[in-house]
Image 1 (tube, rainbow, N blue to C red):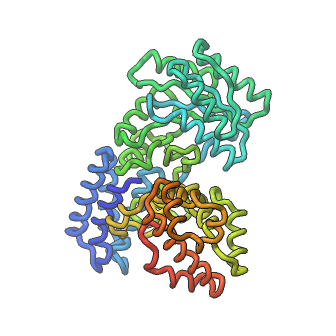
Image 2: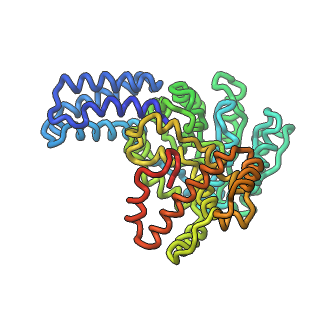
Image 3: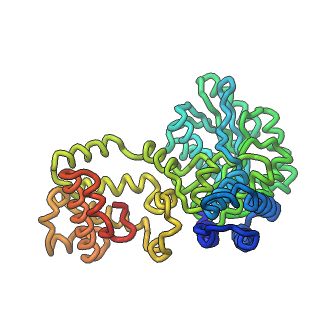
Length: 452
């Protein structure tokens, strides 16, 4: 996420990090580079101007000049100003109303609105323990209603049936009435994607908004459109009283212009980030955490929250007890670890939140590919239960059969077994001498891209 912006800013700030003295000259040089980095990231020019002016003013004040480590003080200022541009603090959904709380979703065509409805429904059910009903008032796009019904089934929330012959206002009011009867906590209304220049469609959503009076009106926008996302959100806000923004497809956005521009241009908070295609790939937006990630400082709080939500605690406890008793770590355990890693978004998503990742060489980052985890899992799945429990029996003919069954090469099977053997040794050390021994043994021994 925002890799090119992060890389450029880190390269610029690295030169000043260890400076024992900050002068007007080196502040000017640094801010020129920061300005270029932000413009290349497609951050809106008014936002860049305000940001650079604020950093300059603080950088030439007592806060930095009298600091014992002025370089670090300047970086702290950059981080705080990034937070300020993006909104300073997380703004949660306001659901403090008599149930059902109504959420209206608006946005352009192709912004990922229907998928975001499903992601938000799942987030509300799992994180906030809310009962949710979803309904589609998109009577224009073929199969939009069917798509939402399928997604609702996947995320285990109730779906209100509708059809393209109905009026969107009638669909929404009927869905809210049903939610009231069923005592649902939240109703999410999906709407048709529209262009902000389309007066007829904008008139329809205004009519819909007036009829249902939602507590939250969320604008769903594609992060990849950069500062255009902020301009579009502003145009929508002039027609609808938006309460927040969901920024989608941020996992594929190397620039970050939308995230840094939206709050300043619209005055509306970003409430969620869509970070992948899966219905679990939705994160609350925390400006402080994202600023840290952009500056290569990691985001351990989000990492911990994600682990609490997505790691199978029973499996983890079972493995911990097994290791503590000195019982063998086998390929079934190894596969379970790979699956847990994929549940958390893969190694790429985890590395994005790890502190110090900005200092990892580009060659190593490029070597990390989540597909290799699926390949490893496919190889393990091609083994018999006996082979998974007793990997030492896997020799020549078995390796050939496993490679053929998983669509890989014998060399791939050998590589997996080698990695597994290293992991097994670490587990033995852990059972005998604790974590410190395991970490010492791990250092420098695992191949790039492996999480262990």
